[in-house]
Length: 283
Image (cartoon, rainbow, N blue to C red; front, top):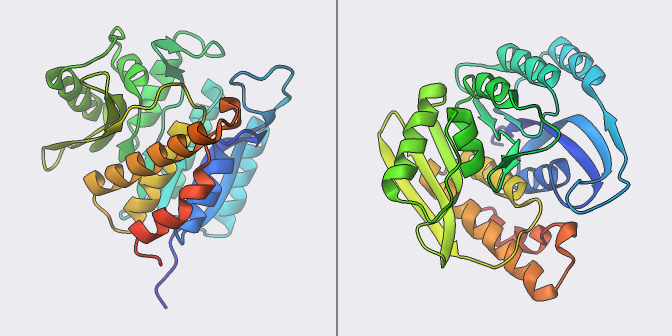
C-alpha cells in the first residue's frame, strides 16, 4: 500500500464558524492525508461579525507540542501555517519550520493578517515585518492582495488590477524567499475573481478565475489554502492545484448563497467534498 502523507496544520480553532482548523482538518483529511494539528488559540466562534466570543491564547503550548513531536521523530510531508496572533507565535513557528524542514517536504504559509486594504486591528503596525520573516522560510505563500502589499511595504491599491501590477506583486513576493506564490483576490474586471500563481524557477505565471459572487464570505481563504495544499500533495502542479482550489471555493460560496445561510457561519464546503475527491481521482 502506498505510504500515507502527513501534514502539520498550525492554525487557530473556532468552535463555531467554518474557518481555520475546522476547515483544514476535514478537507485535507478527506484528500487521504493524515492531518496533525497544532492549535494556536481556541475561540468559541471566529471574530467576523460575532460579539462576546471567548479567546484562549495557546502560545504557551506551542513549544511543548513541538518538543513532544520531535521526541517522537515525526516527519511531515508539509507544514501549513495560518493565523498567528503575535510576534512570539511567529518566532515559535519559525523555529518549528527549522526543526521539521526536510529536503523533500513543503512549507506553506498563509500570512493571515489583513484584508480589504487594512491590517487586522489586533496587530501592531510592524507585524507585517515579522510575517515577512516567516514567509522567507516558506516554499509557497498564499497571500491576498492586501497581505501582499503589506509584505512588500507598498501601499494597497484598489482593483480592478492590471496584469503588470499582479506580476509585480508575484515577483516581488518571491524575492522575500519562497519559490512559489499563489495570490488570491485577483480580478481584472468586476465579473470575475480568482488567483494568480507564479513559479520563480520556471518563470511561469498563470491565472485561474471564476464568476464573481456578490458578498463577503468568512473562511474562504482557509478553504482555498486547504484545498490547494491537498491537491499539491496529491501530485497536481501549482496551476492545476489553484484551479481545483478556485473551483472548490466558488462552489462552496454558491451553495451557501443559494441556501441563504448566515454568512457569518462560513461556507458550505462539506457539500463540495465529493466533487473534490473526484477531481483528485479518489473515487
